[in-house]
Image (cartoon, rainbow over all chains, first blue to last red; front, side, top):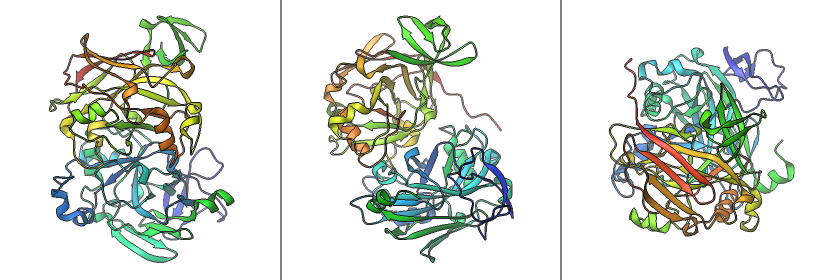
Length: 258
Length: 252
């Protein structure tokens, strides 16, 4: 059992509640509570931060258009039109048949972090949550992938923000993606190129992460693809599980986002 | 009408600018020298365009793009009129970039070019500094180049859409310490304001308060600590900024 900030649907202030990450339950909920998107600030993502991402690119990191492996963290933004909560329907855009689902440990900042040192970096974290970072499949990361990563509903987050002091070691958490109940991907944050503290230090060396902002640590290599009708559950040790399902643009418009 | 956001005597106000006077929403009228200019709106999503002028693209040895080269910026980058932008001590290529900024006035998806201006609230000026020493070829232009704190002066105000007769025919000029260094026109954009609104809204919902920085023409040059950089757009105004030395990380 862990303490977490929970954004109940219809309630303006997040509530501190006790949750069970393994069972996905709230201690004082009756199971019928609906949860909302728990984040309030800007959401920044990190690419190429699993060792397997670099392996996947292999030699091509030394060739055009990349020329050499990345030095600074490779960042992008998930803008506000992409935000959606747990248990929502996410649309596959018209004209597309499938999307990639990325499983991200999300660092939520409780204090504004600017030029922080790696050894103090975790002091700036208020908690951790799960983000399903959705993309249209794309091979090149040479240019910013706005069309691929910023479509409406492409950033699901939740179900809650587990307090930072409840997470023993953010650099050793198992991350699993289940599609329609079947395990499809399994990784651990122990595979990060820049572990959480180092990532915070290196990003905050050139841009401030404000209180309430969120930084995704990266997406494991080989993000699975899903189609309309699929249900996706991302589970992270000590945090919980985030579930969403995918629908076609047409049925999304017809049925509305329940 | 020119709408600004300022701080005055410990509070933040929206204000209407008339000449050198500001009419605060509280009813007070104050001289512009008494206020601190803030970015003229609390922004939603901030879009920026790379290589959107053919002359600037060829200057950087790129072919003009076939699809808009769009990137996003965080609100940490914005700083108001007469603000200061830090220049890291280890860079040699810090460039100003004078850009027309389009402020979205209402929510829309799948907006056509013909109706695009119905979704515009007004226009302001941005100076989207780049720190080219930090360029890397991953999601280029990468965040270390374009998402630094206070690296995007914006303002001084939002000029109402109705007060700008043709946003696609405005002179853009940059002065460094009073000398004209960059000159171009919005008529030379590769992707026009209506095109960009149609393009972006074809795959994502645009919301009130979103801002599109539409790219810079030929002529960015290096600037240094102490330089005063003024970016000017015909019919909108002049945005001033001073370059200061970036403070190193505190010793911990």
